[in-house]
Figure 1 (cartoon, helix red, strand yellow):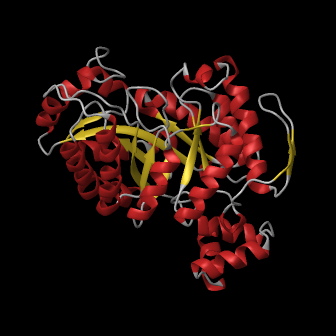
Figure 2 (cartoon, one colour):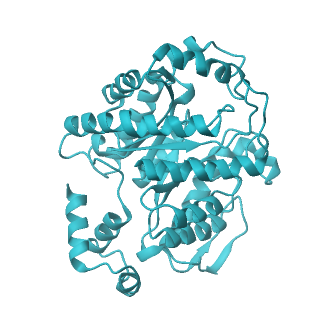
Length: 391
């Protein structure tokens, strides 16, 4: 099972000091956080996409492309790529370029975002959010899987004989998650294509999360991609820890009370009861998150929001160390012990997807031969990856 962190990139005043970082400092802090997560041994760093204050991550591929060069092992992802307000042609180009730069150490999550005004800013109608998500992603897939595309639709100008460049690495597109909090249509879309489904449950009770995930699982099986329990699922969460649980509550309360999203709303205690937010000791986090599989089944990725609400960089780095050092090893061990052998432990890697595509005859041999020359992969590597897929 993968564990990592995601950021929304908010610029928020620290309520305990009154200090507000500027945009440059916030962006550079996010880079430091990603590098620290890699060094600490976490599996994933994901950034959101926003185009309005108080958020700064307007260009995810720029940030992730830089991080590809300064990290070693961590998977670089998005916690939202706006499928509704970005041109799918640009998405095809930018994320194929990122895939090449990272040598496949990336994936991305399609979403509609949580800021209504972004639609008119980019010339779209929020009332068309679901149809936009469906049509744009259908075009994006064709741009990645077909060398030459003729296309016409409702929301953009037609394409005639268009080839998106660069082509996906090894002829295999990046792995895609579809993120949604409340829209079954998006869970249906993920299931239809056999993609991953990510439920960012940070504002919702687990009962709602379980309902959405279980619907996705049923539809995944309906479309013939495997058994329901083999569907690829990810969850979002929030934690703040101290070895002294009461001190954790005392330290986090002013940040919670003034957070731009949920501040001045429900109490910390009510929010902690009704959502996955867990403020306390590492053991409390282990107990809470270790029980989620009882609600949603065995799942493959758990991301945590940790760098928000004005928390200082030093505090965030300390939280990452607690997560990576005391929480993740236990959760990973417990998840692996409970996972049935036929259920995937992780989302598929690029190498596994290439091996599967080769076995199905879906990859042009010329493209993979060139890629093998560049990366040094061998036929024996492909056999090993294919075995991992079957497991």
